[in-house]
Length: 359
Image 1 (cartoon, helix red, strand yellow):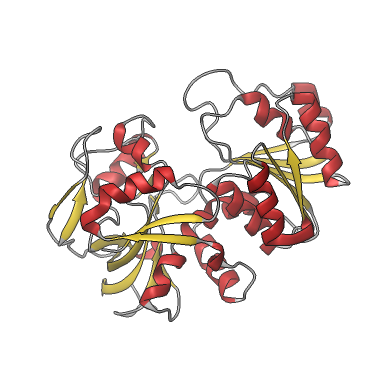
Image 2: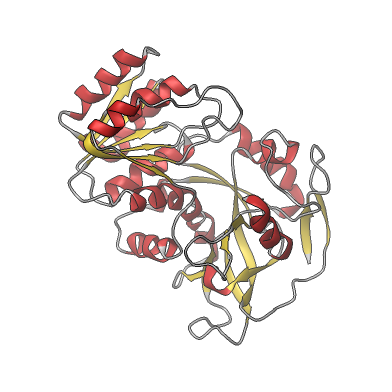
């Protein structure tokens, strides 16, 4: 098969002929039709993000494709089915605290690296081998629609955060990082889950105004000043009442005081979800006050990705019309132009924009 291979950090991807994946028990082979390019993939490939990668590797987290072959333990899938390939691979011998690898992207700890050595290759190829439980049926779609369905991979991340926080219809949510790619997806997911109000702080007035245009009066924009105390009070005023849940999904470049200002808007007995990259590049910690956490009974949820059943549930939300994937503007590249796709994604990583490779 044709594939794009990362042979060393800091070098371009090499498009070449690679061995076809070989089917094993508990696995599915999928023909890749469309796969998204994360806006920061250039930072992964350069080594700037310090992701755990056992090179050489065919990168690419997740895909939309069609089932090519199934193993003997698959009873619902059929050859030809349209599917979403969930990149969150979990070890099967510890259901309580499984090791995790993101197929084609990174791994967590020694156990995650063991997973990566087997499910190492991702979706920047004509075919990929995926654990059976990670293949989620989409129902019938057209080949043209496959690009837009790649947005599932973006929406799933904040959806996992809101599931961890047990977000309920009618609650008020604050999304810290609402003007980013994952943050804007968090706004749409919160509204799809029934949030009565979503506070969207940011410094880019055009982007926060666009969120209001897209989703209406339930979105409450806040222009940040950079002063922690003033911004916290402005966010509280915009909510018009208690904030039940704060989801932070800021990138590593953001300072901790911006995150802390948002986190500490949550009401007593409220929930905070931390899904961003703050602190991963070094620097000061978040430093939340112990007395505030204790006396207000605040729940803090650190969440990486989402539970195994999340993708199927989100697909149902799309099918029901609760979550619209047509908000996303897609730009498509073929596999021969994979390096151009990576550069395009880095330069065009704003809200509801998606760069897609179609092998």
